Image (tube, rainbow, N blue to C red; front, side):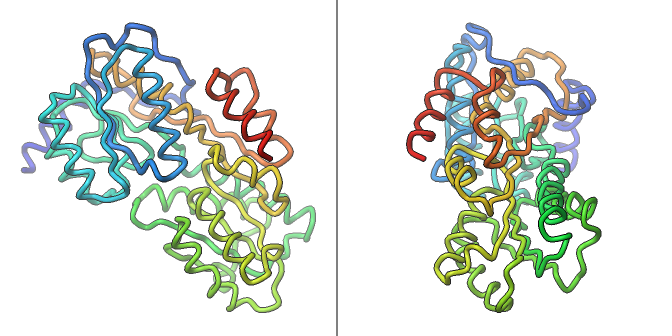
Length: 342
C-alpha cells in the first residue's frame, strides 16, 4: 500500500509547480477546451449553500468548456464520498475535484478512485491531490479576526466577555488554520485572548451551533459583549438563531467564513454580523475547471490554487459582489434577486 501511495504521489508531483504568492486569479473556462473529456466532482453537500454554489459554478464552467461532468454528492459522509470515487473509476473519469468533508477518509478515497489528476477543494485530500484549490485558510481567518478586533477596539476599547469559537474538527488542518487565523487576527489588534475567555466547541455547522449556543450563553449570564466566530457562515446563522430564541441576539458579535449568497441579506441587515471572509464559492469553477483540464492535458499548474480573499460587511457587500471582477449573468441576477428580497 505504501509503495502504491508513493507511486501516486510521485506521478502527480511531476505535474505541479510551487504556488504563486497571494492566490490566483479567477479564469473562465475557454469554450471547447474540455471537448471529449470527462471530469468528476465529489460534492460537499448540495443541501449547504456553499456546497451548492461550488457545484453550480463547476457545472457552469464545465459546460462552457465542453467537458462532460459527473457529479456525485458526498453529503458530508466519508462512505458516500468513497462510493463516489468508485463510481468515477467505473465511468473512466479523467480527472476530478474532491470536496470530501472527512479529511481522515482521503487515503481510502484516493485508493478507491481512478488514478487521475485530483484537485482538492478546501479540505486536504492526501495522498492523491494534484493541487489544492480553495481558501488560504490562515489568512482567511485572520482577515475577519482582525476586522472584529478593529470593531471592538473602536467601540469597546477591546473589552469583551468571551470569545466563542465554533469549529469543525472533522476537516482537519483546515479547521486549525482557519480558526487559529481568527485568533491571531483579533490578537493583532486587541492582544492575546485570555484562556478563561476562549471557549471552543465542535459546532461549526448550523445544526450543531443551534444545539451548543443556548448552553454556551447560559454560562455567560448578563454578558453582552460576546464574540462568536465560526468555520463557515451556517455556524453563525445557527448562533444568531439560538441567541434569538433566548432573547440575546444583541449580545453576540459575529464573524464567519464564506460570505455565500445564502447569507448576503443577513450580513447586510444585521449590524452584529461584523464580517465574513469572502471565498466566492459561486466562482470556484473558474479555478477548478480550467486548472483540472490543464492537469489532464499534462500541463504544469501551481499546487496551491488559493482564492484572493476579501473582508465583507454590511457596508461593502454590494460593492464587492457587483464589482466588474465578480460579474456574470448568473451572479448579477443572483445578487439582484437577493437585494430585492432584502
